Length: 194
Image (cartoon, rainbow, N blue to C red; front, side, top):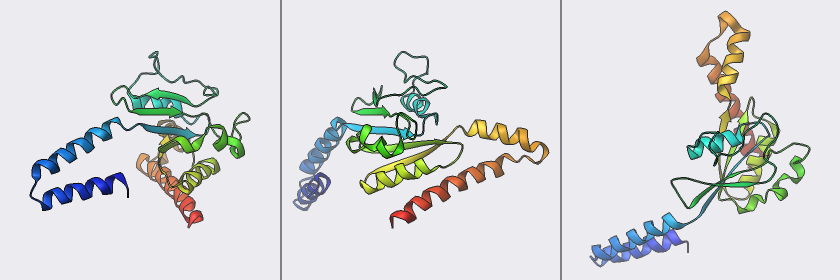
């Protein structure tokens, strides 16, 4: 029986016995415990996709802050690096190396970064949904864990589209194409696992 089920059962029993004080006490204790449970969030994706920038934004920290994850135009994250959340002390955001580089080839990536130890994942992708994004999503789903997909660098894509399309440029249509590409890629991942 899971912790949530046990707590729910205890609350239900207390309420059935008209003991609202006990039900409230159980609820408060459970919520207090939730605040102390460690949560490890892995930020993963290809090198150069904007993972470290996302880690900093997620934590509300400027890239020039001494507590910031380093960002660069070349591969800079060489080991999984833990960054505590400044407001939620039980939350740790992990900046993982990029998948699919010569130092972190896709076939060795999961083992190198110890994928199993994370509670859930954020896959950061830029430009297009790629094979490595799909591989990461598939592995996360196989582990029975949750992931969020973040499409980064859209501002750069919009600027490029505007320059290349000139008079035919339509920001909303371009954004819709990007969204559809992400959805199509994620649907393909889901279909492969069914």
